[in-house]
Length: 141
Image (cartoon, rainbow, N blue to C red; front, top):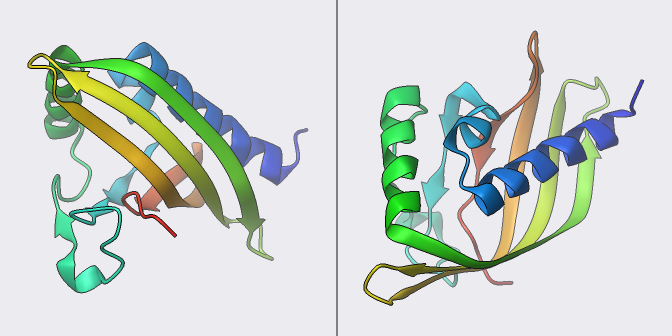
């Protein structure tokens, strides 16, 4: 059996593969039904008073439509990710991962959309395995 940190890394790798291949079903497979994803308006907005909720709580249909549309309108130029830390709770039922990302998209009008900085991904172990419950938007530290 894989150790717990390897299980979390597998989810990170699955998410990376989903972005790289624009596979919405694979991307949505990592989310817990109670997932929320707050976004800072810029990577320098560390104060959560400025953060926004773009998609609200995970809703498979809404998030599927959002990402299908995003992938239709954007071409992936590169997607570099490095896991810096995986921390598992003493009970083995919660985890966080810190990942540096550099992902560059270009939309149909040639506008760049770059995700560059650090994120924190929070996971819970549920009956189906590990699921992501919360994720910060990209921040520069």
